[in-house]
Image (cartoon, rainbow, N blue to C red; front, side, top):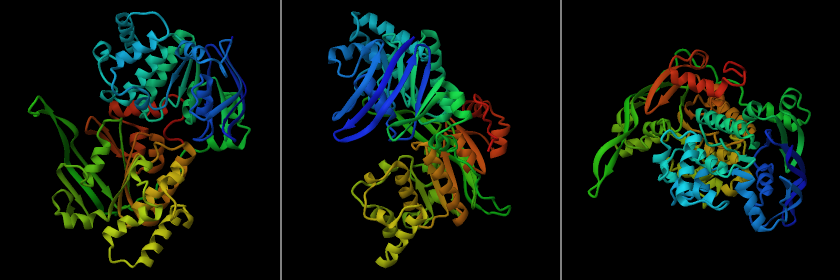
Length: 532
């Protein structure tokens, strides 16, 4: 039975049409995936179904949800449909949840808006929902606020809220984008279990084709606001007809890092590296314990080598990267080019920093919005090569921008004028302009579409080959790690639980945690870690 019917849907901002003639249907018990890159219009399509478009957007066409026309429906009718007939799971739970309100109250509010129920009964039901979505200590977490939960826990709260009124339709807008592979697998398994138990229809909005292949019955591929191909998932993946669909399927990061010389010398070595954050409580803020973010790890990196540091969110991998660069206080020993990083005086450390650079996860957050791209890239030269002539500095900046695939027209533009992939190229150029020998890459592709991921991976591979760079590649995406790493170190709860070559870690993992990570990333779709 058809639950959702969409015909010739359009969305426009004034004279600018961004969604064009979109048509599809969804039956009860079925999963339909709408896939495409950022800017394709898939999220606007999902938001229009429940009248949730942003200000200035106007929808046209026909959307019929459980027999009710939603486009142009009065607000009172839309409020009944939202949550009551169609539940929405938004992409970023931290911005969707009220940061000041306890999660139990937020789930209870979703119920009380749709039916007469006492606060006590709604709170009891909220606890039951949290238990259903996988909170082992549901009753004790009702009074938690969003910032006290992990990313996966916040997403489970969003799912509980969406299910609170037993809607027949669940719309999941990029529900796993910011999550690591094991938590992704848990969230998707949870959605699948709830769909089967409740007979739900699931509309899945995503750019991740691995998720689509595993979980969707049918798929619609969107490009520039238009559905360019639609059909059964197995048929689309077996015989894609549209060039854009084929490009998406082939966009997985490929290749391998350049071969490592057998006699490559050790560039960086850490021994018993620790980063402990004190826990202070009481009126006098006495230290009562410590969070052992990095708890005595040791690692070694040779010239021209990529060591991937992998693990779940909160495992300590980013903190370890910052500690190696002395961007956070740490103890132990870090030797870089024969010098102890943690004991260097500031003037000597400044000299080392020119050779040790970092590319952050969020390029938009790490680039100053007030500086032009040319100023951003040249900033390091002003610190480390202050005597360089202005003409030489401009030549160096233009050359490095060209090397990362940006033209001279980028020099006088600002970060907000670029796409996510272009901003990451700017961040890479800022690091490369100083000719470093060691670069920490902190989740450099996690916020990017798969086709842009592949482009950035190819760029990083080329830069390593051309300049002999050593990378510490911090990531939770094992498909990207497969294309980047010579060796892999697996972190859990601040400790390295397993280290080895890429082939050994992915082909025959020894530690139970490593095996669980590999199963979450590769084990469910027949696409094994050894495939090209």
